[in-house]
Image (cartoon, rainbow over all chains, first blue to last red; front, side, top):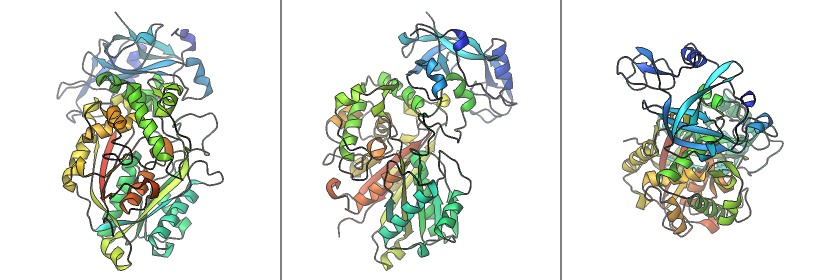
Length: 141
Length: 390
């Protein structure tokens, strides 16, 4: 599967909330942040107002290494965003199990993504679309 | 254990034609289904004092139970619009009707859903490009995730890997379900399919093919509930609700747990325990089949077969009419129509009354209606009991 030139990569951009803004701002600095609960010392994703594990609102951020393995993936053959997205097909949606123990939905990029298998090692690869850097992933190793 | 109460019964079922209903809007479709269900029960609109519904997905409407009540000329003493998710919404509507009747808020309640998902959809829009949001957009759309096909594709891919299953296993579900639909006059699909047709159907989002996916449908379904005593007084046969349980684990696919952690097993365990029944007591399983994988996950969670064995279970004929436990005898969302699971209920009631004609499950006494909303985000199981033969 050949990959699109970066200029053609489409994404529906997020509308950050007060809670998620640090996450998206960090992406623009090339950092993948995960919410960290200071009460139970666990990580989670996505950012929210309380820890989904213990309910505490004493929250901070942890910089993720951005590495993990593929939990599952799908090569999307049909546009669900209307005609404009047909240029993207096929593209690959992936659920990554980050090494820190958090599951992360993303898009797999790279010419070699048709070789993806469950369990394959992946790493975060930021790409900027219309001024927002997004945490995509690519196969490694 | 989550009991519902066996003193309220389903006394009427109604379906509109399914497929394309041009010129109908959601309120007309729901009203038509309610009228059919009242007629089935030998009742009229004058008898109705409870209205419970789901508003259309394609065009979310506020106060839709009140809209439907006005349209029907019903001055209701109990109204509710419910959106828990998928078939769990239908189950929750039934549960609310039972509770409203038990607690004296109304005597006769209608539960209804229907809309124009087929003809009301802008042309060129695929899948559930809905105006209502599912809540995870910020964590999904930047990565190309939209609608519900891709989430189920992710789940199906994981299933194939984890259980060493094959696309042919999903195909067995599609082929059998189509065979069931051919015995149902009110079904969109009229032609049989073979496993080869399944395998040749076009790729949508790997590993899902077109024939893994449910239909896009206009249509509606409704049921009427009243107390068992009132039903007996007017000589109407009722179908009782033995138990109902639900479980949520997440909503968006970004939060998808491992398959074995999904809520269906827990919901099923609670529903079976509360009913005092086991899977071997179930004569008919009406399983939400938005995708072929949906059936596999549910049947395996309940223990109809082992993990990864749904394909073999279907190939053995267990899910066929005359098999150990026929599944989706009406043709399901895959081959009859996708009316949010309401027609899983109307079929269960029809079967438990012994009125299913050419597709009647002999001696059907207990039916399991099960389903999920989202991506197995909320799972539910409801066990219905007929009065048996007269």
